[in-house]
Amino acid sequence: MTDYIRLFVIVLVLAIPAFAQKDFLTNSEIEQIREVQEPVARIKLYLLFAKQRLDQVQSLMAKDRAGRSGEIRQLLQDYTSIVDAIDTVSDDALVRKNDVTTAPAFIADGEKKFLDQLQKIQSSAPHDLAMYDFDLKEALAATSDSLDLSKEDLTTRGQNVNLKVEEDKKKVATVNADERQGAKDPAADKAEAAAADAAKPARQAPTLYRPGEKPDDNK
Image (cartoon, rainbow, N blue to C red; front, side):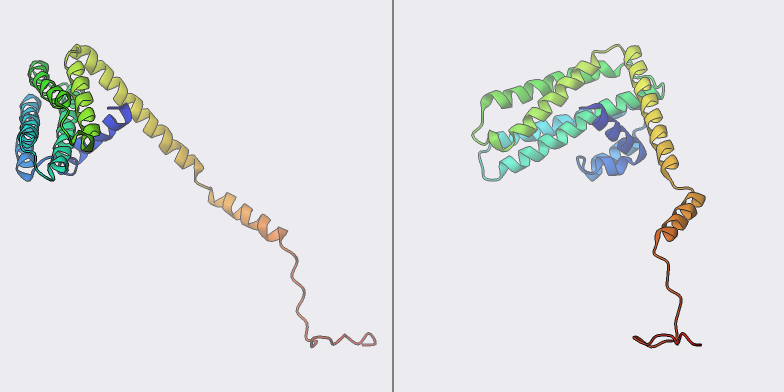
C-alpha cells in the first residue's frame, strides 16, 4: 500500500471508524471492534475476520456454481482491507506509545497461513480466475507487505511512523498557508476594480436632443 493510501486509511480509521469499516466489516464485526480498545486484542479480532473471509473463499472454490466469482472478488477485497487495517492499528499504537510487543508474533503466525491459502488458490488456476485475478494479486501483495512489516524492529518502525506523521503535518500546514496567502486582500480587490473601471470607455454626457437632431449653434 502506498504512503498516500496508508495515510488516507489511517485518517479514516482514526477519525471516523464506523465509516472506514462499514464497507468491509459486518455490523456485528464493527460492534466487536468498537468494544475492544486494546490494540493487540483489536489486531487479533482483525486476524479472525481475515481468516473467516479466506475460509469463505475456499468454501466457494469447492462449489462450481454460477455467480461465485463475484462473491469471491468481494471477499478478497474485504480481506485486503482487513489486512490493511491490521497495519493501521499497529502504526497508530506505535504513534500513541501503546505496548504492541506481542502483536508481530500473532500477525506473522496468522498471515503466513493466509499467504499459503492465497497461493494455493492462485496455483490451482480455477476456470473463473480471470474474474478475480486482480483482487487475488492485491490480497497476496497486501499480505506479503504486512508480513514484512511484522518483521521490522518495533522501535525503528515506530520512529519511521512518527517521522511520516510529522512530515504529513508539515505538508498540511504548508497547504493551509498557501491557501491563506492565495486569498485576496479586500484593499487589493478595490484597487483592481478601480483599475478595471478606468479602463472602460468614458460614458457620454446625457442629452435632451432627439436622435438625429443637432444643437442650434446660435444659441
